[in-house]
Length: 98
Length: 371
Image (cartoon, rainbow over all chains, first blue to last red; front, side):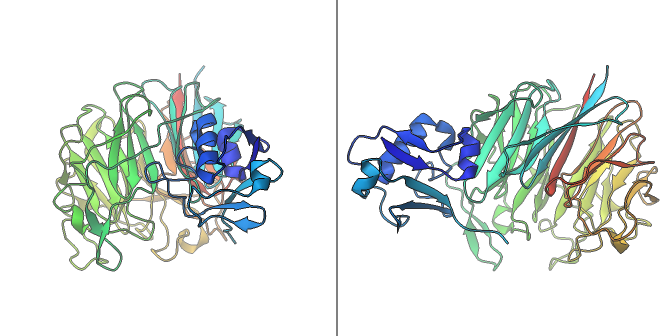
């Protein structure tokens, strides 16, 4: 099972209070995870990536295994530790505020 | 038993404030959609249990929430706002053409015919319509395609369509306001539009009497006289007696005629309310005194309403969608501030008291009168 951590704004939106686990068949990529996530929680469609272009929203970041994967193509293979469920795939709201 | 329900949108969630007809004891529910910007929450005049909320975030984009039980529970609904065809360009801050891009919904205006009919005013400025309770949205492109569209440019807050007013006697007649394009009217349900800016005079644009470019902040009307419009402009309080075909200034003895909100008493069509703000750079009450000004003469002659409002060291703002009136026999008037206070008057503005004092910055206030 793939583990996904969402920022509080998206947890509020999807009525989640903890990490999400998803069954994602290989190859495990950001696109495959997002497809599975949005399939289970349709309210998240458009909140992480654009409806039409699939482009990541500008103030959303993807991290895993201490790497910033935000600028990698959505079809990039994720680290084995994410695929095995040992490490979460992190969806982050970019730092902002005062 | 009559009562009121005040729907409050804030920078960090929505709140629902309820009271019986006396309006002296309030129940505060919320925050709903905690942490999200709630630009506007408004109920259907046909079915008060049907409420629409615009939920947005710089991080996560636009959501639309709908309630069928008066705001107790909410469900997400359609949130795709796609411009009709290829949207073309408007004018950017530097004068160059800039493509229309959806940013957020500023205002929902539920239809007067059925609760599933609702209009949405968005940034970049356009009007959308849903006939299925918000599940799907279709642009009424005649507005954005107006021949002046390529000249429209954003104000400091973005190029937003923030005001939609439906003629309560004629559902085909719509008024909208756009910052900073001006005001428009449709007489055919939104298919075609005309500018309604004659008489506006804005010194902050190169041609003060141009057809477009005026920063209209808010338009209000009384249901018994839908041809009489009141406008709070960037500067100037204005009135039209012919559905916007011609405007004249009614700022009169106001200490400053800059402001955002304007509204009309529920039972007295010549009684109008504004909250004067110091200037376009100083978005706080004149002299640090929070005063609602009331005209009982349809403008020009204004009286300050101060009882119960802070009269020193007050430096909040009252944003354009943050004032509303109820329709109980003794008309209630409500407004919210960027300091998080929501003030209510149960006697037409004579006296005021805060319902709540410490919400996040208030973006919008709407009121439902419950019979």
